[in-house]
Structures are given as structure tokens and as C-alpha cells.
Length: 103
Image (cartoon, rainbow, N blue to C red; front, side, top):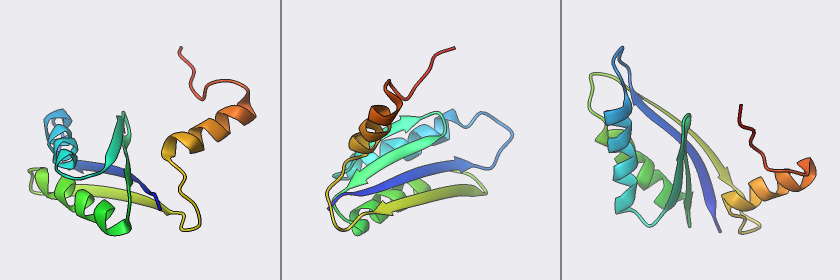
């Protein structure tokens, strides 16, 4: 089973968040998960919900600040082993092209 999560962790601040977001992403390296960071969050793949939640907890606690905001969306498809990239591939097949467009 593959559990896919979409995670966004950030300090609540007026300053740049890049350094603190990098700490959250770096915390994922201590876990047996795959991840890809985008401008709006990080997609994480784990073998179980427990692995995913452990990694998310570490990412959340890695961020310094008086207030930290964490958003997590979980896709726990229990009947198959579908990777995040396969989900994107399915959309691209229907589109007939890559699911991205440069300006």
C-alpha cells in the first residue's frame, strides 16, 4: 500500500519562510519516504499511514517559530499501490500533454 500526503508547513511570519520550510523538508530525510517539493507544498509517499504521520510530525516540529501552520491532505487508497507519479500520468493521458505549462 502507498499512502500519499500533501504537506505544507510554515511559520506564521511576515518574513521569508524559505529557511524554515527547508528545515521541514530536511526532516523528511530521516524517514523512509519519497517526497517532491513544489512552490505550494510537498508531496510525500510512504508505505503506511504511520510512516507518513511520523514524517509529518518531524517536519512540523523542525520549524521554529511562535506559531507554525501545518496543512496535510492524505490519500490512503487501500485497494491498490498507486504512486503519485502514476496519478499525474493518468491526468496527462486524458489531457494529451504534460500537466504543466510555462508562461
